[in-house]
Structure formats: C-alpha cells, structure tokens
Length: 351
Image (cartoon, rainbow, N blue to C red; front, side):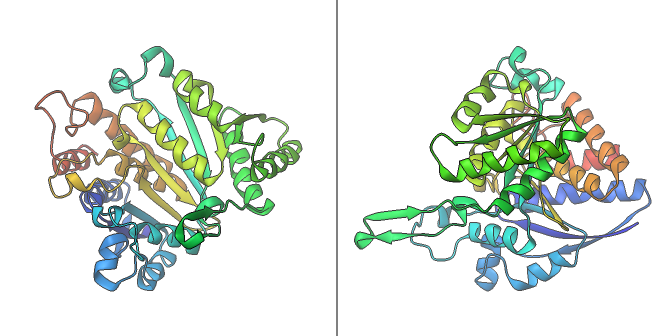
C-alpha cells in the first residue's frame, strides 16, 4: 500500500519526537511492504516565524491531500509570556481543527504493567484502567464570541453549542462504546449551564438508537474527582471542548507520564494524530524528550487507516521497550535514561 502522510513537526520538542515516529513508521512500512510518502509542512511558532501565519494555506493544502496527518506539538514561551500577541501558535491549532473538520478528539488512557508503580495513584486504584475520552473539538468556549468591555476591565468568552455538534460527537461515542464494553458516560454541568442541558437532552434522545449501551450522566466536577478515585470504572466518556481539555490532561498522568499517551483528532474524512504533551520548550534540542506518545499516536493512525496488524506491531515494540528499560529520563531510574534518538533507533530496529 502507498500512503501519503502530512508531517507537521511544529515547535519545541515536536521535531525530535516526530523524527522517532517517522523511523518507526518507516520500519513498519518495510516490515509490511508499504510505502510512505512524507509531506513536511509548517505550523505553530515555526510557521509564524517563516510566513507570519501559524497554519498557512500551503500547510492546509498538504493536509487535505494526504491520507493522514502526523503532528508534533506547538507553542513557544515568547508567545506564552506576551498576552498582547495578535498572532499565536495556538491559533494555528484551532484553525487547523476547524478547516480540516476535526470535531472529535480521541484520547485514551491506559496503564502499562511495567510502569504501574510510577503512577501518582496507588496500584489498586488504577489497575485495569482502559478508558477513552471523546472531546468535542471545534465548538464551545474556544470558538465562541469573546471580547472586552468597560475600557478593557471586563472580559467575556461565550460557550455555544448546536444540537448537530453534540449529536455528531455523541454518535462517535456510542459507536466506540459498541466496540468496547458498551458503557458510555456523558460529562456535563447540566445543573448550571444551558449548553450542558442541550448536551444531556441530545444524548438522552439518542439512547433508543443504541439500546445495548449503558449510558450514565455525570457532572464534570464529579468526574474530575472519580478519575483519581476509581478511573477503571470508566470506559468511554464524551464531553464538550473545555471540560475535555482539562479532564484528559488529568487522566493522562494516571499512566505515570504525559509522555506516554497518544491521541487522534478525527472528522468525517482525514485524521490527525499527535501526542498529548505540549512543546516542552525547556527540553527542545536536548534529545531527552519521551517519543513514545508520538509513536503510539502513529499506531492509532495505522488503526484508522485499516492496518491493525501494523498498529499492534508498534504497540508490542513499545511495550517491549518499557519492559526492558529502553526509555528516556522521565521514566528511567537515576542516570539510566536514554536519548530520544536512541529510543527511536531501538524501536525501529526491534520492529
């Protein structure tokens, strides 16, 4: 099979972790007799520096003409520390999601037996955790009306959802639940927010179409608490943009490191695959960042491209690297951490 993959390295550690994922993907392609055509493109701060736009039209053209997008990270401290900046790297991410129609962010959280005691939570609380968040990605407060009034002394951000936006995200949630343990949790704040009441009534109306799925409804603050009490009680959770942004970061540390969790952003056609961590600028260029989340994001990409054997081969070699201690400093015992590039080379060789 021939595949065309858009390669958006981005900022900070993005280029370093993306390079390791490319090594792994190329090794998988050789193993399974595929050919991958990589199409690099600019985004984030790197794109602002080059062309003044965090998601230029040239990048969009490459993405829409590819089978999938493999993405690193965006963000730079000079923008984080300048609230008055008119153009920001994160605007590119929002623009990309909207223009590509990536309305559903799929973020799994699972544990690794070899690392389970590195979690900040007790072993007995997290054993068996295998949950997936579906976060709505192109609506809500991040895309609503915003502004300043009273000479800048009052600021507002508006959370707006349509029934269609809720329904298409919930549909993917129900479908995923049917493939798993047939449990779905709708996370909202329906006791306070009108937009959450729309979420709840829309999902309730859809229950009849999926009679085998057991549906629960929980407030976001309760879910935030229960994720650290008994995360293994959840399977598939659906929620709006802001709640999902916060809860998925909370869930990500259950495994022991944010550098381990992959994600996919999907719509009706193309998918984008990225690690859940940020650009981690403090580590940029030092060859110390954990590439496994990016590599596992590539595994999700192969799954969605209809190549499950290739995806499983990647997951197996990642598990082997963890079991044998071929890991970066965030997961290693003192002074035993390997370089980012060493881990990538090892993964590719062991495939």
